[in-house]
Image (cartoon, rainbow, N blue to C red; front, side):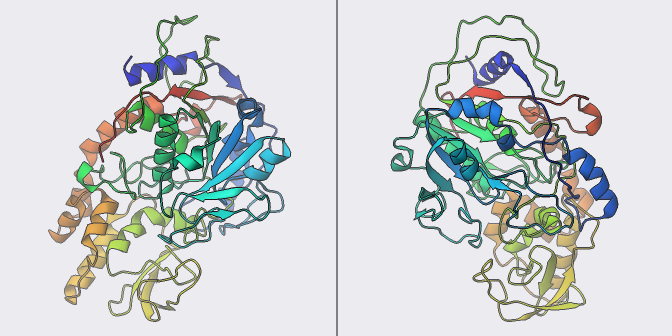
Amino acid sequence: MPIKSLLTFVLLLSAAITLSMSGHAQTVTHAQTVARAKTHDKAEVAESRLQVGAAQFNEYLPLLEGKRVSLVVNQSSIIKSSIVKSSTITNSSPESTHLVDALLNRDINVVSIMSPEHGFRGKAGAGEKIDNDVDVKTGLPIHSLYGKTKKPTADMLANIDILVFDIQDVGVRFYTYLSTLHYVLETAAQAHIPVIVLDRPNPNGAFTDGPILQPDYASFVGMHAIPVLHGMTLGELALMIVGEQWITTDAIDAIEGKQLAQQHQFKPQAFQPEPQAFQPEPQALLTVIPVANYHKQMPYSLPVAPSPNLPNDAAIALYPTLCFFEGTDVSVGRGTNLPFQLIGHPVVALGDENIDVATNQAAPSPKHNNTTLKASFMTEASFSGLDIDVLLNAYAQFNEQDITFFTRPDFFDKLAGTDSLRQAIIAGKTSTQIQASWAEGLAVFKQLRSPYLLYPLTASELPNDVKARVKIINMKAATYHE
């Protein structure tokens, strides 16, 4: 059976699960800039009903009972975080429980931890290699997926019955937690180990923008033919990675020959209860526990910084645009107290602010270390999504002073997923012309992703009563071309 047909078939088999939302209310802020009071008021109402996948114990604990469980987690894998009253994201909360502790407290047999870039505690700098370790609190072994290997090894998977993935993403293709998810799905499928993805909101979920990655530019900062801003959660992307056969797996038996109790067409955004039907056998399955009562326009302030240099909502909103400067001579504030909230240079005056750059824990080797940047602080900017004009204006200023802008052109192209963006900037194209060149690719992508979407685009599409559905798909033989 083709994988897309299999996906539809298995999704039709999944029973609708009505979730009671008596969860703790959180205040959230718009991921665009610093928090504003109106945003908080609206967000409190929305977030009072939102429930992340990890908080829905009734939906996945039965799948873990009696199993040897490994968790792919980091500092963001928390449940019931406290109310956030400002745009600054904290790294701890007395009202938050880490998933590791929550499962151990419920007598789940957690046997190991796997950690992505930045480590289990999320303190390592970007690109900093991480060794295997032991968690002091629990005594559990921590296997690094950003050290000697980026893929779970046979030793890591030995004596494991099931994997649970619960990491907060920011909705940008080159943020490497997505690549870690890809490798976890791939190696688990090859070992016939089920994976549960506990989904979390995408703080940039309202946006789908940027060039589609081309195969020649695939790397760990971009593995899939998706745009820079893909508008999907990691749960949705997990379904797409498997459904589009982007992973290489050993063949396993597809579910054939079973008839549905009631036939109907699957509509991802209808959010109607599905008929009770046969359940697939739990072998080499991907199970996604969706966020309850979530839509893609919903303001969502992350309760924990997802990585050291994204400390607040402003940085997370600016990241999709400012990260492109990592391939240039422009600093984005690493080594300052405003990472990913400014652009600056020691010679080219990109703004009127002066700010010193110095090594810190989040930036062991920052660009233009021990210099003073002539910077523009971006925290008051109103833009979100991608703003190509920021790149164009900086490039023009460098050109005027005959200073090299693209100091790492190959890395810039890896971030873009193509060399066409860099070439368009050099050629003097306008932002309108550049973004128009992406339109066809984005339209095709939106159509391709449609069967895998778990959440409506707007609040008006949410039902009055809160419903979510567990999504299950077989990880059948597939090929990913790197």
